[in-house]
Amino acid sequence: MPRTGHHVERAIFDLRRGVPVVLQDADTATLIQPLEGLQASRLEELQAEAALVVSRHRLMALGAAPDAHRAEALRLPLSGCGPLDLARLERLAFGAQAEPRVAALAEPADTGERGALALMRRALLIPAALTLKLTGAARRAAQARIDAGEWLSVESEAALGCFDNAAGLLKRVSEARIPLAEATESRFILFREPDGLREHVAVVIGEPGDWQPAVPLRLHSACLTGDLFGSLRCDCGEQLRNAVADIESMGGGVLLYLAQEGRGIGLANKLRAYTLQDGGLDTVDADRVLGFGDDERHYRAAVDMLAALHIQRVQLLTNNPLKIASLEAGGIEVVERQALYGRLNDHNRRYLSAKAERSGHLLDEVLNGDASRSSACK
Ligand SMILES: Nc1nc2c(ncn2[C@@H]2O[C@H](COP(=O)(O)OP(=O)(O)OP(=O)(O)O)[C@@H](O)[C@H]2O)c(=O)[nH]1
Ligand SMILES: [Zn+2]
Image (cartoon, rainbow, N blue to C red):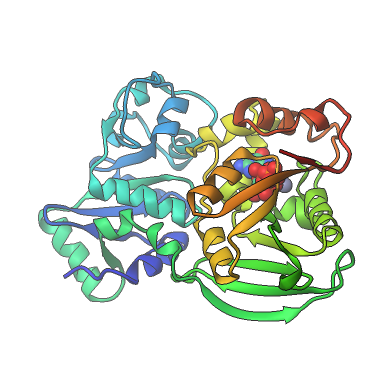
């Protein structure tokens, strides 16, 4: 019997270590092997029978026509890809070059293969995996390794639903008073997602009773490079500090520091995306080449944290219409938006322009050079 439920998160840890996982459903058993940690000898063993499963965004980057496939996950049989070593496999999975002949081989993925991609995303790995359908002797050999505790087996449907565990039962774990330079009356409250994979922090500034009728709120997605090191490639570090100061000057409120590094693709992939941007792509296209959508963030955890803090009406500090829509979809009333800017510089100009032009961020003032640090908007 396949082990399921909480084994999904254990499977995610195995995949991050490069260990294969078996996904099972009524008809099929699918071995999934992440690309990170793959050995050349293993690739040789698998190549004749295996497929590379990629997202639709990745298939487009390989050169498929936009309307070629509707499926979100596609299988590329490796037998049709020509001579293959690890470097070429990586180029097929996340390189900048198109490979239209390979893209033409794509077939819609089945449940196990779609489950494989969901796990890769949840594990913050490149959303591509080698997959092998297990039958006959190979299936028996895999079962022996599962029985010996060497490999994990998970139901395909459980893998597909691995993002559903992420919210709803956030655990409030610990808290402490942390005086900040810009807001001395601050309290950090740590929440953990039920599968233990991500932690988010609510920074409560001032006294909750003072926040009527709407709570000043910032949703800040983690950015190690900007928040901690002051990277000039983005505006995150300045936005973070400005948000704390603005909330303080508004009489207190809440900043949710969300574990959504790189718009949800993780730091490893954000660094890959930066290298692609140095080769000429903008922030949206670089993520697509890696197989991701324009924005992989979900705000369910934020909505749950607000529920835990008894917050229903907010004044949101953001330039991102998606954040407003996501909160409203979660039942939070956004009574006002307040713009929040960092400074424009030679390194972040392209990034901010792309966010405005391609993702609808409201950045006209900052791009036209007449922004004060923040301003209230309707
Ligand atoms: N994938 C990717 N992520 C980036 C890049 N530059 C910055 N980020 C991430 O983008 C996110 C920005 O977060 P926020 O500032 O909260 O959000 P925002 O969408 O800019 O919206 P507002 O700041 O609220 O207007 C962080 O997670 C950064 O790590 C990039 O070039 N590629
Ligand atoms: Zn940043």
